[in-house]
Image (cartoon, rainbow, N blue to C red):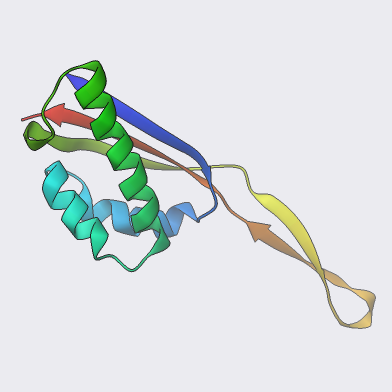
Length: 110
């Protein structure tokens, strides 16, 4: 039995979020939550919210226990990028790209 949760359009770079996702891939849910709690990155907080959502989906829809779940797959995809301009010297402008990402977590039973 697999349970999934998806968070979309999160305002953090996918490259930065993948660093945190690599830490918890394949871990049990309780172990992953402890690791994410003490991670000082924004991606850790966002992955925690998505993981809690996946656990809630498993408990309510499929009557699974959180103690028996582990992270089967965690995928961080690029979302759309906001393109902005900043004025520079001598009438020029430079582009600022503000990335977003999508987080997909799939949980499975041990």
